[in-house]
Length: 75
Image (cartoon, rainbow, N blue to C red; front, side, top):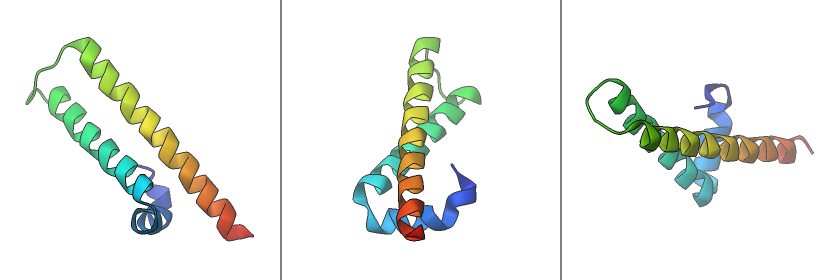
């Protein structure tokens, strides 16, 4: 997720517990979705879509936190 911001992510994971939780949950959802897509797990279409939307919401929240961090470092 957001590989171009790996330095910022590393710092935020250490300094911000909420960011670390969001990041971990996003990765967990990514693994679950990949398992379904690969056929290792089974899930109905609606539940899968729900997971994908939650993953996207977490990514958006993490991105906003990264941008806020970057802005605070510019000042």
